[in-house]
Image 1 (spheres, rainbow, N blue to C red):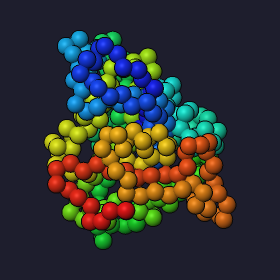
Image 2: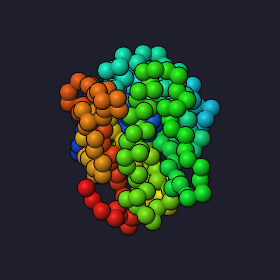
Image 3: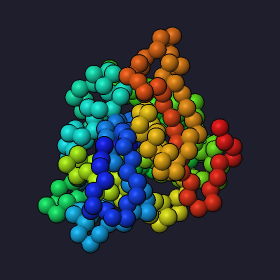
Image 4: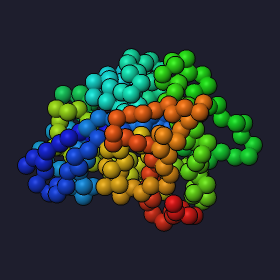
Length: 271
């Protein structure tokens, strides 16, 4: 998820908290959530009648416009992308919007019909004993730098299965990327996009929200929103060939998985 450095404005007289942080949630599993600065408001904040944007479902035909926004405000600032100097990557672009087919991603749209914020989400399904082994995300990746990021995400998935923590859940919402246009700071966009995701969970009877953060700032923001950590792995401990692969700038030191439970769903154990 991404968090822009946003200052409180009078447009939101009831908003009492703005988080100054950068947050990268991912698709990869989600590339997490590549990072940029966004502002996240307390979920109880309400918009006045002059709200300059609406929250709408992102459809697959919106993919090109969504990608243009991510290129401008998101991809270039994610810690792992920056460390690898990833640059232009068509495979990253394709991977980032592949969850749109799940119909649980949302956009903020201004009065001119332009996308000024997005929250990309996907659905995670519990696998059954009869399912064929899932293909690793990195297996078919031909971009050598992006393949390193996908391999890290595959490793995390091998180390931690969120469904083991929630044996009664068969579907979990996976927060992937949240990003807001820097020209629309202080309007509560990130908060409203997140609240819409909660509404979707309630509508579909989904009780657990999962996010993977490769950014220190993203994890801080999610904790402010009531998420709690269930898994953590330092970049220094990821040595697939005996050598550390990722050494992003401080304070980004590792991958963390955080969750938020709605209704009565609780983990079987805590870390």
